[in-house]
Image 1 (tube, rainbow, N blue to C red):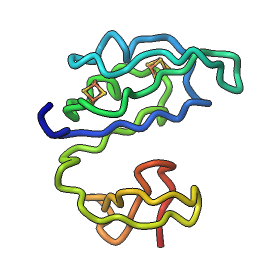
Image 2: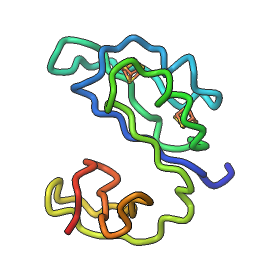
Image 3: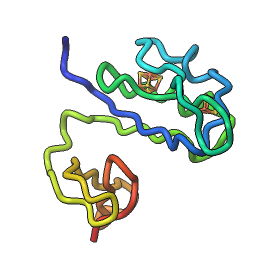
Image 4: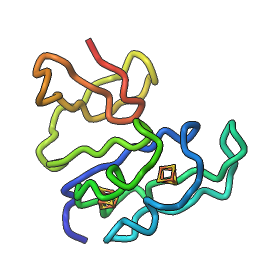
Length: 111
Ligand code: SF4
Ligand code: SF4
């Protein structure tokens, strides 16, 4: 499989399970989880590979802030231990705020 050009993070507990993003995704890498979230919906989940960073899911989602798309995922090289979610993750530097690093798992800032 070709290297992923994008990466997507979905805040599962904010998702209403409407499935719009699942149908909008041209590479079919999103699906609804069999599990329920805190609100009783089946949230959308990323299969973990194959995202091309097109952003269709982001623009389709009616729940603002639920989907975050990282473009140029191959270019994200730095790995750090996130102090919030405690996992070792890629660190994305925000283009708008170049001094702010973001954990690509929990989306919290890493200082
Ligand atoms: S950014 Fe595009 S390819 Fe990636 S999950 Fe969203 S719709 Fe699918
Ligand atoms: S479009 Fe948004 S609310 Fe609907 S399933 Fe996808 S992430 Fe959830």
